[in-house]
Length: 239
Image (cartoon, rainbow, N blue to C red; front, side):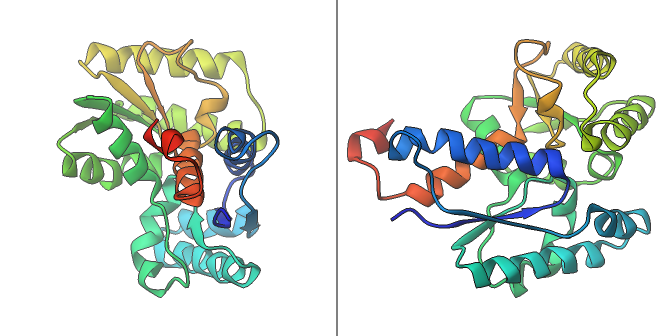
């Protein structure tokens, strides 16, 4: 049987996209309408934001750990968190976790390397983009990380926090991301990380000046591969 996936959710739209991807794309491995068992737990998003606003990353980690413990009780075999920003807190609690985690940034970095990328643009919340999380993980696999300018970071953060996490998807937001990504292309980037799990709802390869590394769907697909490892026919594994 496939392993049971536990989703440690934070913001609703990113978690919903991740869950939907697991359920829909599970059919590629398991047959029509089939997908691994999935459980999801989330605290109120306000609790996460209260910790983040006061720069309390241990507090963020404690929320993640409490979700992990709840999911372990439901029978989950491993955990994913479809939120890039809160991965800043994972080092505080990973050793205490009752279950192993798939790290969203490591998943994205591995995909970028597999695609032969060299210089990666980064978009996401200001708490993510200002941090060393992506630069460190990308540099560990030999890749460069390029951040947008300060003004662009602030506007991206505003769009994410005032619009995307609230389910508001405006053409103006998509246009702004397109311009930022075009600027990153002008800085010799050869791909861009959609490093907030809501960004794929307003940006796609079809609208982006650069190939996108969709952190939400990449994490979901990595979770699917882990969940079904050893259950699919050898020919399918080879693909």
